[in-house]
Length: 113
Image 1 (cartoon, helix red, strand yellow):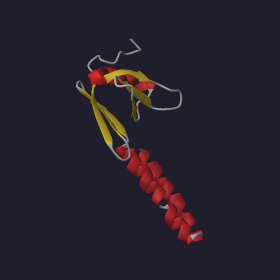
Image 2 (tube, helix red, strand yellow):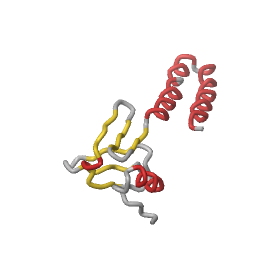
Image 3 (cartoon, helix red, strand yellow):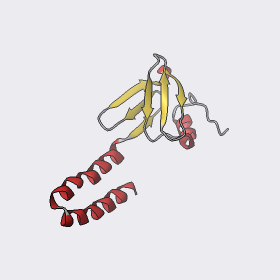
């Protein structure tokens, strides 16, 4: 469904091409970047590892390295690691915490139980 929004954005930007041919063509990159972000940004969790994929790379850590999770009101979750650093968990919100708890094999407590 999110790709439909990128397609709609592309259709809207086509109007700009007729009005501003040079800049309109430059702005057509925006729907491509949005679609790339939709496909790329994600967090994958299983019983042994936690993988965070960002736009330019990915990082995988073992659950033993995770000290805790931090949630902010307007952002995705962050995993606090034992070495003191933090790792952004794209698309993980507080509402998805039960799914993360199930995927982690109980290493993350489910706050709803």
